[in-house]
Image (cartoon, rainbow, N blue to C red; front, side):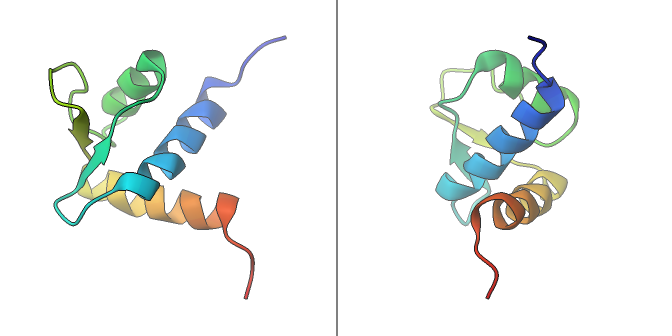
Length: 76
């Protein structure tokens, strides 16, 4: 079975929206490979540090909200 890393990245980015605070930080308790790929794609700041949270870029915030609504919200 081949895993689609892009789909994993989208799910992780969508789930980061759950813990996103008003300062643009979210808890980073996800797979390190996925977090590194999101950093390489420009959605989050460098996840390799001692902090338990990571900064989302403006593009990352917008994309995480969009993906969260697509994946986890029921239509009204």
